[in-house]
Length: 227
Image (cartoon, rainbow, N blue to C red):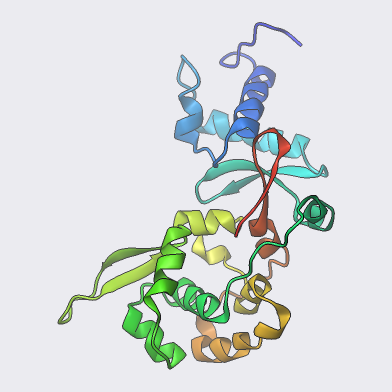
């Protein structure tokens, strides 16, 4: 390989630099962040073409290049999970029924207040549930409802979509697939919420979305699990 890379002038050199940056990155990288690597500014179209070609080159391997809400990243393929999980001595903790219900309501009915969540679930929402989802970076207050007390309106974040391997809310999987985040005996909650939410649920099927969210590739090939 040519030791004097010229990514601004040679598409193959550009892909080499992009590949190195994305493999070394801890978080997804946006086009703006990738552009900062080059002295001569590259267009977004040029970067996208190079990224798409790089994605094609990695097709069929254990690691894939994907575009998510927060940018571009390399991640392990979902079907690698049975083998990669054996590298861990402990199973990752699962979210409780209450946390999953709250997350599902926010994801599919956003923006919602804590009161809205309580009306749908029929029980009060423990503040620690909201705190858990906020600390995970999956939800945030995006405004306030213009009523007495001005309660906070909650919505999901770009980080939430990226953790699920998605780019936009329109790609959210069917509600019952979120049940893969809890133990099988707890997934009975899903039909109840599905009936409540009705046609607001996206019809697409993404069988590997949740599994992809739980296992991703960190720099140097290390495997991390979302807890």
